[in-house]
Length: 294
Image (cartoon, rainbow, N blue to C red; front, side, top):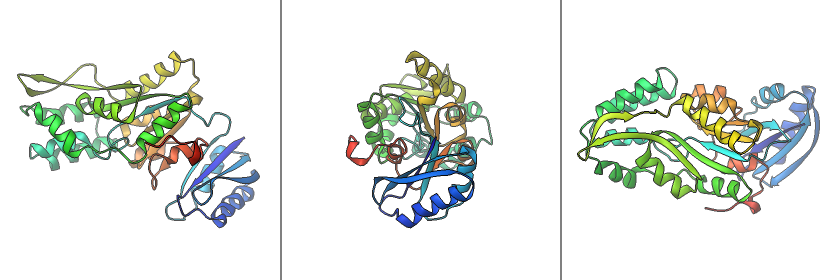
C-alpha cells in the first residue's frame, strides 16, 4: 500500500484531489477514497500499484503551489530525522554570509553554488572557501550569526512535533559549529554535528579541522543513528537541498529535497518547492491539530 499526500496550504481543492485520483486510476492503480488531513491544505490518497509509476504520473500535475509526496504507507511516521542546516533549517548559506563580511561574497557564493549543484567536489570547495576567510576575526562568526541567520519557517514545529511523537533528531551540517550549535539549540535538535574551523589567536587560520563533515559523513550519521536505535532505514527521514545531501537522502526511508538544487531534486523521493518545513508533517500523516507549534 502507498499513500500520495497532496499539499497546497490554503489552496487545495476537491477538483485537484479528484484529478490526482483519476490520474492514478487511469495508470492502473487501485485507488481508495481521499482523506483530508486538513481541509483546503493537505489530503491523502491511499492506493495499490507502482510507487515509481505513481510518482511519475502525479509529477505531471501543474497547479502552482502544489507539493506531492508519494511513499509507502506503512512506515510514513518516521522515528529518526537527519537534517541539513544551510538553506534547509536556516534560510541562508552561512559561509556566503561570512564572506560578505570579508567583501568576498560573489566569489565564495559562486563556489558554493557549484558545490551544491554537484559540479565540483565538496571537500575541495570547502577548503577553497575557508582558505579565503583566513585572518577573519573569530568575533565575526557570532556577529554574522546574530545578524544574518534566521530559522526556516516551520523548523521548530517540524522537529518538536516529531520529538513529541517519539522521534530522535540530528542536525548534520557541512557548515560550522559556531552556527550549527546555536541553531540546533534554537530548533530543539537532540544532536548536532558540523565542521570545526581552526582558530588561533582569535582569528581564522583558513583551515577546517578533521574529520570533515561531507556527504559521506552525513550518510554515516544516518546509518549509525538508526542502528543505535534499532531502527530500519525505512523509519528515517532525511532532508537537504544540495549535492552533498544526496547519499543520505537516497538512503533514508523518505528522502526530501527542500527547495532543492536540481541534483538533489532528482535524487530525492519528493521535493518540497512551495511550502515550509511543516509540509513534512502532513507527509507523515500529522494533521495540524497534532502539531507542536514552535
